[in-house]
View 1 (spheres, helix red, strand yellow):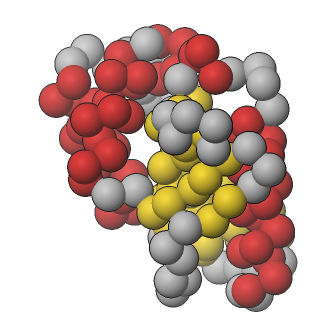
View 2: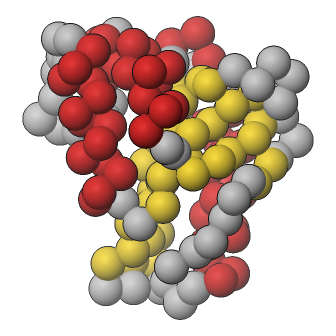
Length: 126
């Protein structure tokens, strides 16, 4: 679909999520203030193993999944990704609680959606 090795915004670096990223991403999902936004059926992820399993399922479901890092410290702070079905683009994202409310999610998803819409034929966005 898309071959992107690295992509950057003003404050962020996004790279396709790899299994080695899961060790840093998974602990963030143990916080209910993060996991409650992931899926309507998830209210709490109880263990690191369950978090890694969930993250692996995301990698197999979404077309492209990016690990979000800060440029300043190269710190992993969350994920964003998309899936396109029948011309509709759906984007998801999540951030660790200490990174919420700082505009990182908006910065990553606005740029991701712009790039996807310019490269592919999506009619709607959700």
